[in-house]
Amino acid sequence: VEVKVDHPFIYMIYDQQSGSILFMGRVLNPAS
Image (cartoon, rainbow, N blue to C red; front, side, top):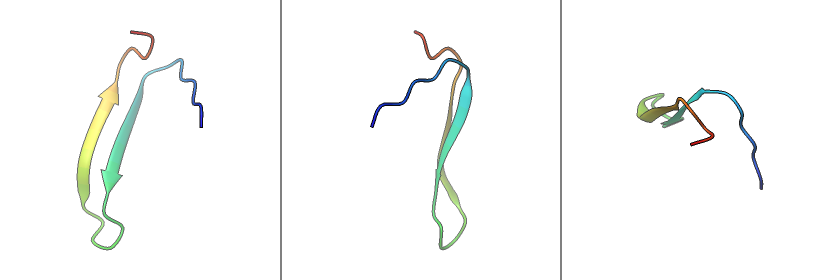
């Protein structure tokens, strides 16, 4: 799978059963 991103984004990993966010991060400049 290849993903090309050209703008800032936020991502998170969460547990579906509890709905708890396990990890969250952001990419401000995907070109760097």
